[in-house]
Length: 399
Image (tube, rainbow, N blue to C red; front, side, top):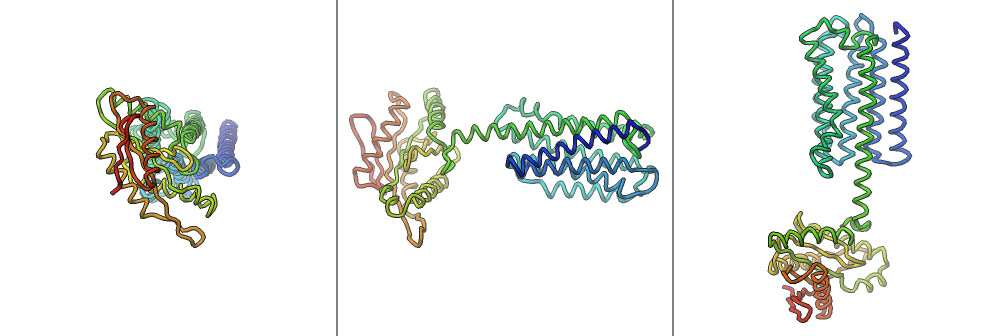
């Protein structure tokens, strides 16, 4: 280091980077908040700090550690940050693409001696690769955030990634056009440029703020989702059901797009619990939920309605189609079983279904579907029934 300003910068940068590394490590190891993503964010900060510390040791001499390794360490830190975001939002990890990009950049860097004489070339390569990684990280985050936010807000909260990518790209273009401005635009052989020094500090701070913001967003929506999910099966619960029913019924009232409701109840479930125990009962409920999910469309809504009772909303489905779906489910359940302590346990379902009618409210439809299910129970179980109104019933035998 050549002056006190550079020493203060490195100390300040190291303090911020070390604090962020420790914070993410605590998130992962102690608090268990998105541990896979948090560990990657911790490594991203650690690698960035190491890369900057190596920068500070540069001289005009050829040195692979302080030039080549320093650049590649920082770029690898950006890649770890991207992988962390992908784990955070449960996206496919882009290991292959990112590692190929890093390898390509590294091979191009190794074509020249790592020294001040080739600094412009090296900085341009590093800047372009950083811009690619940061912009792709921003796009990943926008796509993930779009599941919960509008495109405007999803882009806004990830704008810093695009801004940082733009700054790296602008630096590369500026050096390509004005190579004599190297000392002003890059930490070529020492960190004595205020612009460069503060750029790295702001880069580290802003990137971590965005990452913390994304982690918090993910945590908030996960908690909100858990409030609407059944803990045993992962299906929607009754709270989520009422909201979904209102949406589907509003569509029916507005556009005349009929929907159907199925209420399904496991037969002799108390007897199964008494014979094999509640753990076996839980396994049967989870297996039933899995079969239901495999039997339905993505637009269909499955809810655990009670202890051993399930409810399914079938949008865009009339009476005859609802019966076909019920028969399909019944067949799959009858053909499934679980193995519990060397015992094969089979189950069946009693199913009631109704289809939306102009004179029926959501509450009335739910009651009719429930009544139809009890009719199926009374008709010997493992049957399918429907009920058109409170005063009459229509039983459809299973096929």
